Image: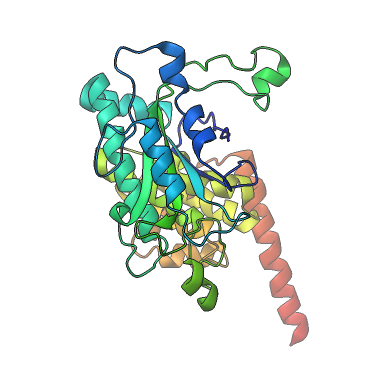
Length: 334
């Protein structure tokens, strides 16, 4: 059960590993053993212990026993646990070190991880599942990452599989049981109902993975006063990778507004999250929803001599073309 780690330099990476890439239908012993690798490889004077909301000194056998025993009424084909990977960017790690120092940064990341698990619990929207205390979970701080066969550096031959990656690589791996702390409620973060299917949600709990990842980013910024730029957000990356033409156009306006009017940066970031969720039909609707902030955004984009990028020109010209076509079709229908 080896997770795929993003090498993104700027953006917080939070991922939940499913059984598609992991053997989580049996004992957790294999995963627990794998996550003990730094203690084995580097023979640290003080081994890195497991932690959760209760203690900071769990040993590996305690983790395995707690996870493997919390499986009431789960069948052989059912997932028994999940792996959550919390990987701050190198920029975020440096920020923690500047705030708290080396060891202090490690402790801060552990405390942050506890709060992320609070968000994980809340995301199910199930009565009785309100915080990390309602879950069975254990976390391990790791200091290094390693190149895998999927990394482009290994594919190109510049790095070898198993080599340590450069730079700040501190991150946290979390094993969380499929069952809650009472061993009665099944909780799967891999269901896709997001609350749309009431019967499904009542049985398994709803879970919006994108909302969970987003909550981790917002939580980090709030806890550590991190000044995140719009192009360092999950919403920005999501739209750039998966967004349609309208969404990219909307994001362009927001990015320029945040760049030229920093006082509205939080407003633009919140709106970008809405754009990523397809909440606006077109740019005009989005700009209207911005309210007062839209005046300053439009001022910037309409300034004489303003020269947007070529890519932005293509996007906005395509939007103008669509508007002209729509207007012509309307006129033909009269």
